Length: 214
Image 1 (cartoon, one colour):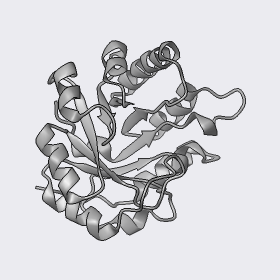
Image 2 (cartoon, rainbow, N blue to C red):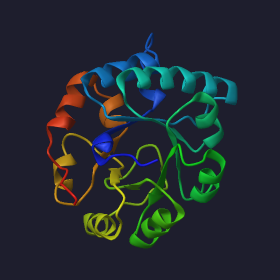
Image 3 (cartoon, rainbow, N blue to C red):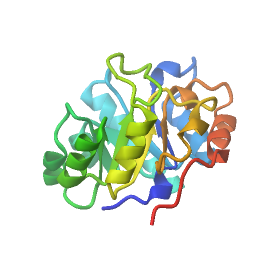
Image 4 (cartoon, rainbow, N blue to C red):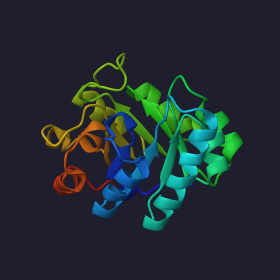
């Protein structure tokens, strides 16, 4: 299953550490979906499997109502059981080929890349899109190294599948990614830490950083 580049324009990656008292992840994400978020990734490193699955099922139903893909981070099994649209596997996670063999052709599979070689390998393995970073550092991955804009451009030019930039992206720096060839941006704290999340979504969507790729 392919994912259209437009669906990756603003890709919200969940981070429950920013939730305030009384807030739920589903409630916050619905605010963002109402404002125009185009893709959601559920990323959970602390929940046990039963809680993770319950949350994934809830968000799958929510995203379905808005016609937005739900991607599960790292866990093809959770993605399949919850009825999500796909999975994102990093370089150190279950391989893209194994995820495809497990899920079949009906699921979106995203891969990670930090250079052209990794991007080409992800594409060859069957990835439908690539997450590239960390373009401005990362607050969620302390060992992430910065990906230079020159390398991001090289990745986008080398592959035929869409690529999204990730890592420390905010309204203050996103415009500098214009001209790189990305389909969109994957944003964590730039959305979840925002006081007004709908305003943040609209702000990102107002930034015309994508380019048509024929």
